[in-house]
Length: 132
Image 1 (cartoon, rainbow, N blue to C red):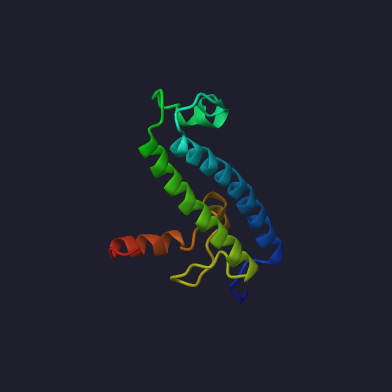
Image 2: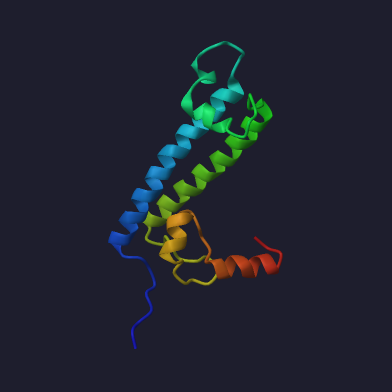
């Protein structure tokens, strides 16, 4: 009987590290754009026409309010922290291990949610029990 895998190999961890670093670069750029919107002092500079700002406007709104930008920036900051924590877990080789069950989180889930710390089953179990 084959032994159940308890952690991802160094090669697999390197693949996840590349995915996370790429996401982190994009997340930080978006966070900085949102911060500029929040800090915008009413001058007419390139912030209003930058491509990344335009993508935030795709919902049809002419301008992203400072309050909305602030909320998005807070969410983005938390996302950045989660990605950075995932990099720490890669370094100590505990990445991809469910913090509830101790089982490996499937690669497919980690590719979609690289900062995940729970298997889908553990997440559902915690939701049913009213915990997070």
